[in-house]
Length: 364
Image (cartoon, rainbow, N blue to C red):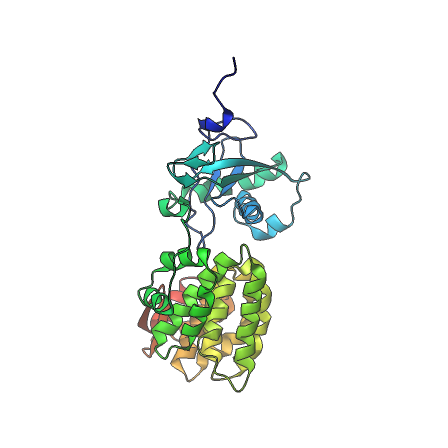
């Protein structure tokens, strides 16, 4: 008699493919950039990244590898499969329930998730494991909404995008971007907004959307970056929020687009564009300060600029890059009460140059 019991009906708790132990639900790291994957660690030292779509395994490999290297990108890029680490994949994983659903469907949802495992060889693990543990200890449970598969495309208009940007509904916009890359065009249009806040919000969110899109289509984001640079250097066109957008895109995926940073330096020679370039550098410094440190010293003289915005932004940048040689010059600004408009996480605020200088000093 043939049993009607089939492997495809099995629902199991996920286990490590290296040691067979039960594993914990992956977490979002506190260093996580928008739409990076949740990660976890097995007691045996193997680590894993969760790709809920099952279509971004290249990105899952990279994120697991960087996590295994305690967040050290330089170390990760110097390692080789088999020689330095082993890889394995676990399919049909559902982040929402933390179960393996062999049928590929559960409660009306399609289950395509993959856990991508990396296990470093012991000599490397001895160096990285404690740092990886500390990263995970500061992690938090992943957002439940991320694990739900999208059920068809939802139509949206330019007005919908404009409203969501104005309300800074980042997650909703990212969900729309997962369905239709056309949203990049609509966000780019908003870079022409006359209102400073609207323009900076559009650049901010365009950077986050580009970070998401670049996982599957980095070429389209590269073309976007080049079009932004072309518009800035075209004397017949206004750059508007283009330089801010460049900074945001690089900041969200510096590993992919950090090579565009050198194209920003010549723009700093244009007095009208200098504040925008400094803002872009500040954004890049938040994710990959090492890209900028070699040439940061050329900005130290700007701490004495007559424009308070340039003085304030320069203090912010040099503080973020931890350029200790600028400490005395920055200290000379702590009593500077001139106001500077600063954008952060969807909001504009005025802060004095002295306040920005004091914060910069705290990082030196």
